[in-house]
Image (cartoon, rainbow, N blue to C red; front, side, top):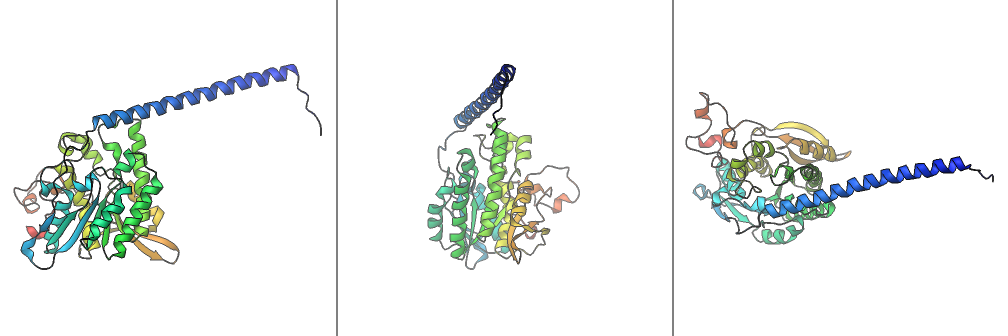
Length: 354
């Protein structure tokens, strides 16, 4: 084996190169340290600004549409504060009440609602909620979860596993399941860039993983994503509750209006034609749904492996007044929304109420 001889000049060059490399590495490390420090400080600031829950939200449990008679549909709602309706003050403004009202009016059947969602819950708390929900022998369950997993930096794989187990357990009990995937946490006012950008990416990554897991377990998903983001940014006073973190009654109304068509479809009672985007592999469907809020993903089995169908129901993307959308009134508006209805109060409205 030959030995390479280095001159003094070669050694000097190597020494200078080492000093330059060390300087660059040190600079990168310094920038990274500053970035981490900034993110940690922003996270601490956001936690300090966002108040802790002072009181539980109104429950909203009970029978909706009792006037229709017959055996009520048993519905449970699980998840975190967004499922519980933290930030509103009337039971009728909570997501569960809005959805129960919508199902009852659309199907002309009573709906018995039980809320087992817990303010501040992460996906790791779902097993306890599922145990409580199964006591009511539910026909359908709605799960809204994921925001706290992002804000608390939970391990994504563990969070998704808990959600999948919850869906599988409910499905084994004969319960239909609809999951509203993780919303865009970057839309929350107290979170500033660059933490906002990371929160948005984390939210989307979690939502995509949730979609795959839920559909594999036999449930349906609706992507919430940045559904509320543009409207929240344009009118934060109206769309946020007083804590600037949770939605207002208007915000919950818009989210419930997007979940409702998929909830009806899961019950097999929605006869309105959906705009079918197409069949994709499940991972592709999850990514596409994340990019287009309001997209439903449901399972389809094929010979080539895991498949899913994407749909957007008629209400998705439409400027409906009962979604809280403002537009110039026309001569047709009087036939669109019953007079005296607010956006939050009309989520359960259907054409049959006209």
